[in-house]
Every structure is written in C-alpha cells, then in structure tokens.
Image 1 (cartoon, rainbow, N blue to C red):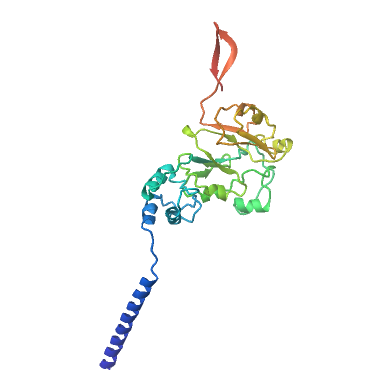
Image 2 (cartoon, rainbow, N blue to C red):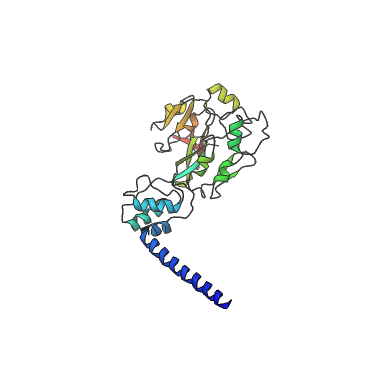
Length: 292
C-alpha cells in the first residue's frame, strides 16, 4: 500500500515537472513583446477610463499613442494639455495642444417657460421616454430631465436641479469627457470651447419647429428670427432648421447677439453686467449705469 502511494506521488511529480518544462518553452516561443513605454504613458494618464478619448480605456489609449507616429486625433480630454505634454516628453515627440472644452445644455425649458401638458408614468429614463413619446411638454426637442446624463458622468459633475427639472453642469468638475453628450438621446449637450472665467454664450434651445410653434411650446425657444445672425460681425452664428447656432470657435464674446434675441434664448454666463448709456447728461459727459 505504501509503495503504491509513493509511486503515485513520484509519477504525478514527474508529470508536473514535464508539463512545466513544456509550458515554459511554449511561453517563450509565443512570447509577445510589449513596448515598455506603454506602461510609462499609461502612468501619465489620469486612469479615469472614461472613454472620452474614444478608446476603451487609458491602457488602450496608451498603446495607441505609443504605436502611432503622431498625435493626430489622439487626445486625453481629462488630462488636457498638461498630460499630453508629459506623454510627448516620454515619447520624444512634439506636444500638441487643444482648446479646453466644457459641456453645456442646449435647453433652458424649465417648468416656468415650458408648461407641462401631460404626465409620463413610465421608467425614469430619458432614452426610454424619448423612444416612447415626445415628452411631458409641447416641445418635442426639450430635456426630459430624468438624468441619463447625470448617471453617465463619472466625475460627479452633473445633477438635476429639483426646481427647474434640468441638469446642471459643474464647470469646476466637468472634464469634457463627452459621456453626457453620448447619453443624451436628444443631443441636447454640446462640448464647447472653455473660456477664461468660465464665460459662456450660446443658444440654449434645440427646438427646430417654426417660430410660432416653438414659442407656443416654450417662451424662451429660439424662433429663428435671424436677428442674432445679422448683428454678428464674426460670422459665428448660423441659422439652420429654424434654429440659431453660435460657433464657439468663431465667437469672440462681443455679446452683441444676446440683446437682439427677442425670446432670450441666447444665454450669457460669467460676464459682468453691461453698462448702458442714458440720455441724461452731467455737464458734457453722458452718464452710464449698470444694466439691471
């Protein structure tokens, strides 16, 4: 009995040793060389794995950056220019820079401006609600407010304002990863150029209905009157499908367009109050006061 046990142990040990040797040579034969710079580049990335760069994760982006001959089309929105500069140093290439971006909501249709005409009693999901019907208001383009974008945000940069029913984006936390843009079934979130002081000016409406119909469903809807287009001297504003759009790359923040908008659908954020001239004069100098 003892002899049998000893032979069994020896046999299994010998078999295990042979298998280990075979596996070792097989592993050496099919060993895949990996550029050590991939680990270095990955270490410089923020490890957010948000997919904002268009790749599955930071590791995937690091592999692509190392294998690519240039940085064309490759950028980490979370790390920004600082991280890309460090990666360029690792790879011995010329660093590329891009303007920082920020997410904005192209809808200002709060309950105050966009009266509710029906009640949705289904699953609280923007994607599902969009697939089932036009929404709880007369606007077929407005925000549902169920927060798909909030759930998609990995940086805690969004929340739903309980008063307005609309998502709020934190300028300080937003990394412009684009997750909210992809999550919104109505394409209401856009990544725009980020100005100093978090200044913003954009058309907060996505309604493509004609003026009268749009205005009836929402009092702050863009009615496609083109007044903003005419006053813009930088060709930054276009009108398409009854809807004005301000190109943030062309816009110079002159703010001439906002006062022209009869429905206040152009939103200005982060600017000081404008001073306006009044007809009264003190001596030969016109008075200026802050515009309330």
